[in-house]
Length: 356
Image 1 (cartoon, helix red, strand yellow):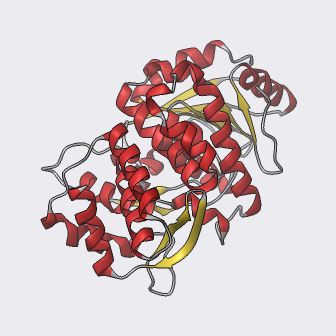
Image 2 (cartoon, rainbow, N blue to C red):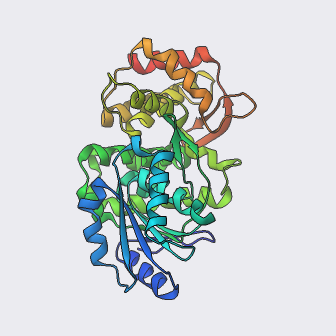
């Protein structure tokens, strides 16, 4: 599978990953190599990765906890301290092996340690492969609010090896697949038709779908690397989805809600808002909602949660000048950015989702 090259960062796939990484190690005189992993990727992915690494440079392993609750400045401080204690310098390389938490946090750590060291992302979840690890966004949560602190800073390369998907439980695969569905909704109706037919999707054929999704995201990022305009389309479903995800993470009496599961709810609700604003036909709204619910089922969102979830919208990173900005759909494959939505319509969207 051909690598995707751009001026900022190259993306390599499967066997090309290790050929490209080993060339990078040979070409550059890195003083030391550090692998950042979490408790899951340390056990299931790190041994596979290290077997294919060809270098005489000393490798140190830094392990953090697994899950969104560890995506914090406090965890960054622990990793910065570990790097310092282990003798990392400006010529060190940090390799982030894990899901979106590891690649987001690891990229931020690398971009700020000693004002910036080189890093490589090795995403091991479907979500990280098609979204989190590509595009140079790095960062952490702040006081339970998602992605409040970070920088856009590209690593040396992204290595996508689908062998790591064999280590994932089914719910994590489905969570990542939500971002693939989003790519169809914001870019290409034909791609949407392909990937929304989930029952016919064979995960042994997932390589081509991953590749197409990375191409879609790469095209957007190349045109708008710093999210001043077009890149905002990648946040479709994320305005409400992130608020819902944050509410569930911070609530002690609610079950786990994975990122992709929350984004699915956000995509349904934001499609409803698009329809109410006469941008998206009811037929398309129905198609989107039925397809997503058929794959993911529904999550109970009590009316008593709605006000608190809506209050979290003010922290969304797309906001400006006091306005809550949504990405909506003019049709499947036709996103529109910077849309203002009245609160009463947001409340109607909750009702639509719960009643559909």
